[in-house]
Amino acid sequence: MKKFFTGSVLILATTLLFFACKKIADLPYYENGEAVAISASVNSVTPVAADSLKKVIVFSWTDPKYATNAGTYKFIIEFDSAGRNFSQKWTRTVIGRLTDSVSAKELNNILLNFGFALGVQHKLDIRVVSSYGNNNERYTSNVINVMATPYRDSSVLVSQNTSVACALNTASQPSNTFTWSPSFNGYSGPVTYTLQYDSAGKNFVAPQEIVIGNNSYSKSLNQGEMNETALNSGIAGGNTGTVEYRIKATTARGATVYSNKVLVTIQSYLPLLRFYLPGGYQSATGNGNNWDPGTAPELIRDLRPGLLNRMYYIYIYLPAGAEFKVTQGRSWDVNYGGSGGALAQNGPNFSVATAGVYRISIDRVSLQYDIRPGRMGFVGGATGAGWSPPNVFPNYAMGAPATNLFVGLTDFTADAWKLIDNDQWNNGSNTVGETRSYGSLGGSGSTMEVNGANFPNISSAGRYRVIWDGRNRDNIRYELSPAAEMRVVGDGILGVPAWDPGSSPQMVYLGNGQWQLTLDLVGGKDIKFLAGNAWGAFDYEDDSGGSTATGVPRKIKWEGGPNFKTPAASGTYTILLDEKTQSVTIN
Image (cartoon, rainbow, N blue to C red; front, side, top):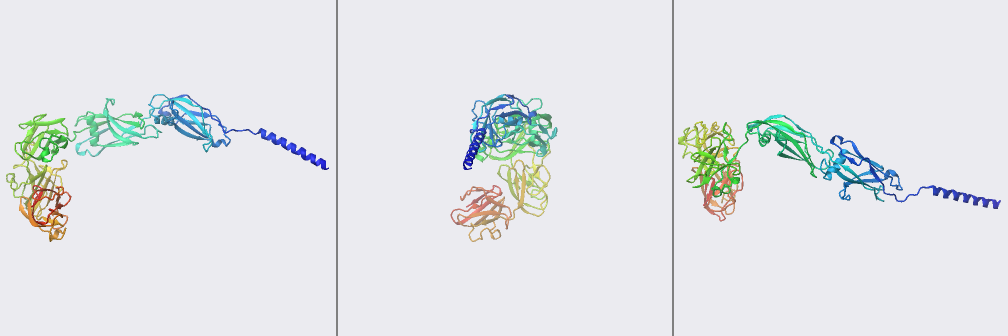
């Protein structure tokens, strides 16, 4: 029995060893995987925009035989322009599949990011890099070539209106909106859009452009901007014509496409024309550089009916012998001179024999000009001159401290009034030599009208300060404020509470816009001038750049600014404030 058991065990062990060896031999044996072989469904493709969602290339590759679950295999498909050895490759990753495809728009995106020209066939190198899911055991496949052509994927442009009417007095109002769909559908980079326009029928041979920016799909234009597109397209102001528009779209790599064109009929108007006064007087008078239209003072546009873009004028100081011309715009391209009242393009220089303030008027349509003394004065029932212009000058004249600026103080009664620049009323001729009177239906700060309505009646008699301000050529306006008193306030007055208007000393009015006061000043401190006994009243600040000089007029201003500096040394000083010349002198 013992021998039998021993033999049985030996037989069993031998049998188990046999079957174990057989089972191991039957298992497949894997190395670390192998490179795949890739192929494509086509070797050439030329999609169109209508195919954007269609799969245009299908790729497949062999099993890399990694010793792991096939669902975790990682494949990176690499694309590049042929011959670059994948130095600027575009990639996409696939997990667990032995096939992939690209749509037309995906392929187009690849080609556009490579900077390929539209409509031109280009050769692509394509390969697959396989690996385990953790990127180990990476192998690179064979390289295949596919010929591919990027297509033109243009915006579709729509115009809100097919016709618009534009007018100068409504130039800032909305007129038309253009909208468009994105170009290069699926492209991931920035696309710059530009609205191009040209006269209808010219086929955009030399279009004008309005740059919109990146990834924007609408542009609204007001009447002035639509009018500008009409003028730039050769439609003269006051006429009607048709302009065609389109969208230009450009990728970051330079691919460019154009949308459909839309046509808009535009009723145009003549835009604002601006005129300037360059001459040899500029540097000496603080009006820019001599004979430089770019820095020359601007003439005021006469806004009366029928005179817009026709009549222009300026009130300006000119030294003796000053020569000058008038330019349309800030260049010499269109310039006027003349003699004997006749205005002529490219004509001789204008000149004045004596120094003084002048009013210069031109009429670009009738080709006439007028140069006469530039002045402004008070007229009307509320003034000492009454309604008689011959009584205005010189007793009720204003001062002219700067170009297109007059300042004056006068005693008013409760009545109506105007401002006038001549000793006779306007005669309705609308000629260059005609008188200009000024009024407004609005209160202080309102825009003035030439030969318009009276200013609002003075309700309380007294001395008032009036400012005729044409420094903003687009809005000539007036200021009216009480001028019963003028105080010196600040921390630079000896024995006076600092910055307390109610206890600050009052100046003495000398007449003709001049105020004077002698007082003790503390050196190196601040003062300013206040036309009342409380803050909020009209006041003057320093426009001299912080000068502390004595005996020299310092410029003043009322639009806000720094305080005046007292002289360096403390002492007794006499202060003269001259509102007509807009200066203050400390002696």
